[in-house]
Each structure stands twice: as C-alpha cells, then as structure tokens.
Image 1 (cartoon, rainbow, N blue to C red):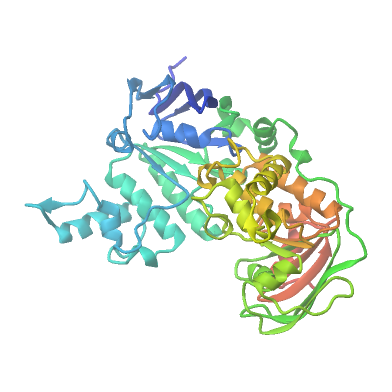
Image 2 (cartoon, rainbow, N blue to C red):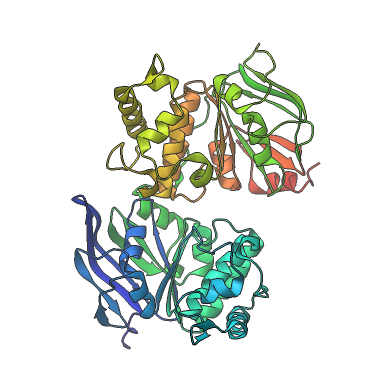
Length: 500
C-alpha cells in the first residue's frame, strides 16, 4: 500500500468564533497538488470563513494550517501569497482604470529599475502569463473594457505572477456564459496538469461533477464529508449539505386562483416586442429563455424600472391601466427583487433594519417621523419569517452570506405586502439549502394570494417552482406551458424558437 501524497494545503481542526458564536468548529480540508477539490456547503456553513483563515484574513482560534506538511501561520493575505496560497473571489478585483498588464503585475511584482517601471518588460511578462493560459487578451486593454471571463482570466494570471501553487476560486462562474465556463474549465485543467492545487467553491453541483476530483462538504462550521467525486452523486451531496433528501426542494403546487392579479397587453420595450399575458392571484409564473431573450427586461418594464414604448399593464381583475413608474408600481403593489442584489437590491454598508426600513418608510413613520420601535419590529419580523442568519437587525448587510443578503432583499419587499412580486434569478449564487427556503417562501407567499413572477435561467428550477412557464425568444413570447409535465427538452425548443 502506497502512502498518500503530502497535502499542498491542509486545515486541521480549525476553530473560529465571532462574538462567541462558532463560525468554524473543527473544520478540516486537505487539497493535493495537481487536483481540483470542491468545497461545498450551504451559505453560512463556514466555507468563506475557512477560506479567510487559509489566506491570512482571519487567525484561527484553534487548529492548525499546514503547507506541504509543515505547520504555518499566515499573518496576512500577503504572507499567504508569498507561501503560494492565493484566493480569487466572486467579486473580482480587476481595477477598471488601468490596463491588463498593470492589473496582472501591480504591486511587488511590477518590474522596475531605479524606481522607474519597465513598461516593455511588464507588457512582455503579462503576455507570457496570458499565453500560458491560452488567453489572447490585449495587455493594453483597460480593466473596464474586459468581459467577466476576461476579468477572471486576468485574476488567474495575477495569481500565477505571484507563483501561486494553491489557487482558491470562490464562485468563479457566477457571471459567465456556458461558453465562457468551458473556457475557464480548460484553463483550470491545464493548471491541474502543471501541479497546481485548486480549491473550487461553487453552488453549481453539475460543474463540480464535471470538473473536480474530490469534494468536501461543510455544514454548520464542521466538515461532514470528504470523498472522491466519482464515488458520490449530486443527490448525496445535497442531502449531506442540507440534512434532507434532494427531492424535498420544491413545495407542492396548487395555490393559483382564477382571479387575475396583473394583465399585460401588447407590451413593448427596447427588446421586448408585443408581449401579452396574465398572471393570477396565488400563481407562480416562471419566465425562461436564453440570455438576451428579453426575460429580465420584461420584469423591469413591469416594475417601471425601464420605460416602456407601448402596451398596457393592468393591476387587478377590474383595475385600470397603470403607467409603469417605479413609485407608482410600488404603490399599486408590484415589487421587484432584482438580479444584482449587491448593487441594486441592498445597501451593503447599512444594517439589516435600515435596508428594510428604507423600502417601507410609511410603515415605520408616524406623522412623518420615523419610529425606532417600528423599524425594530418590522426588521425582527423579517429576520424571523425568512430565517435570516444574523447576529441581529443592526448587523451590516455586507457581513452576511449571499443567501442571507438575498433574504434581506426579499424581507424589505415582503414587508410591503405586494400583490405581485417580481423576482429576477431569485436563487442565483446561493446554496441548495437556501434555495429550498426561497422556494418555500415563494409558495407560502402565493398561498396568501400574491402572484409571483420569477425569471430563472435554470430549467429544473423553472419547472419545480412554477405553476406555469412563459418562454421568451428574441424579445417575444415563444411558449406558454403548464409546469406540470414540462421537461428541459420542451422548454429549450421554445427558447430556441423551434417549437411547433
């Protein structure tokens, strides 16, 4: 029997507490050189905290970090980087006002002589690194002009410039198209062949089973499973992550009524063309389609967040036509949960209660004076109803996990008790367990009579959470099908404009 190779990076029984609460409780992770190792778990399971411990952002309260078998202590991100351990986060750090070469070699890796930057050498080294990744990105292009996948590749090149031997990627495909994801996977496989150890954090389990060699699952700050990907399954991973069977993700349907909540007739926008449909009280209406099909624009038009160029929107069974403006639609009971929660849905630097209160000023005011007691009441109710994992209503939203940030966006809109709730990619970038909670909330909301219109790019999600599904194709409605009995093939045929 041969001995297992020494781990490139290992976390042994890591403990980390914040305000007396365990974020990590005996967490373990071992990644080998030349492997891609998935780190999985629900939002709040401890993945992000473990990464921050491994990269010197947080010091562990107990436990040990080992680099190639030797115990190490990283006092800072720079110290971890000098040991070859580099993390790339979902919120990419490409600087928009400088070019690609500068982004790659900024800082201590900048070639200089006598205090002067050697620009030709910088551009040559940057090109060599991009060539190593097989990426023909012009080194003189500004960071602001890069696509999401190019930003990712520039960040990977920066890590290579730092001679990273352990690369940690946090949700690297969140903003990428399928083609861009394949491109990234080719790069990661080539780095694996070079002996780089890669920790891959993702909520997209299909990617994990396509790309990774081993996986580790965390739950409640503990490591609960590590095994070969080939010896596991998506259903096993889900049940291990959330403590229940994968089939329990979607609640039962059947809350739709015959009463119309919102009717759209001949709606036109920049891309949306002549769209007409109705959604009923208690109905969950899913909207799908390829990227650029007009599905997100349709929600913005309904919310009044984008001017419409024609058509009619009517609220209620016998309501009058409404001119779509954000304030007017909110007053009429139409609320939007946007796709980009961090930039459009919440104020990251503000507290949970302030985020919720700002969207509900009338509800927390008396005679125009904001009442602290009402703010606390509405915030605590939102935290309890949506099971937001937080220290309390005064915690800053930016400190929360992505799934809990999404719940704050939902909480502030649900506090308005909307008649129609519009949701754009409601579960993007959140874990399976939190997805199940969002699906439960959607169905509970529908059971009270609220109509929910939700855009999703995930076909199983569209089918599982919806009563009925509209499919967009090049700005127009291509299909209107019951979710019961629908399958991926049928929805894709409409999305590509090929259905009869």
